Image 1 (cartoon, rainbow, N blue to C red):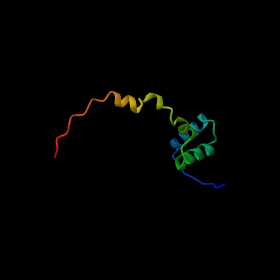
Image 2: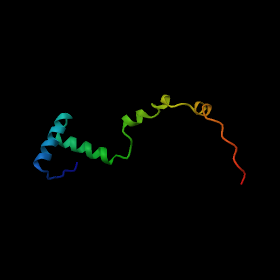
Image 3: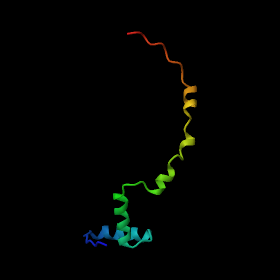
Image 4: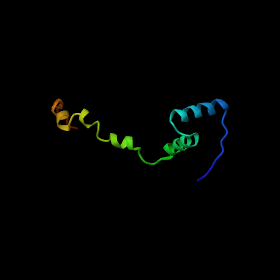
Length: 77
C-alpha cells in the first residue's frame, strides 16, 4: 500500500478531521474514499439501484400519442 504526504492549511486540516470523524472514518480512510469516489469508472450501487425507478412517473408512448392533436396537412414543395 502506498503512502503519501500532503500539506494543508490549518483550517483545511481541521475541517478534514471533523468530516472524517463525522463519517466515522480515520482521516486516511476518509481521504482514500474521496479519491476512490473521484477516480471510479463505474456507477455506485446507489445509482445502479435507481435505474428504472422513475418509470412509473412517465406516461407510456401510447398515452403520449393519445393526447396529441392531429397534424395539419403540409403544403407541397
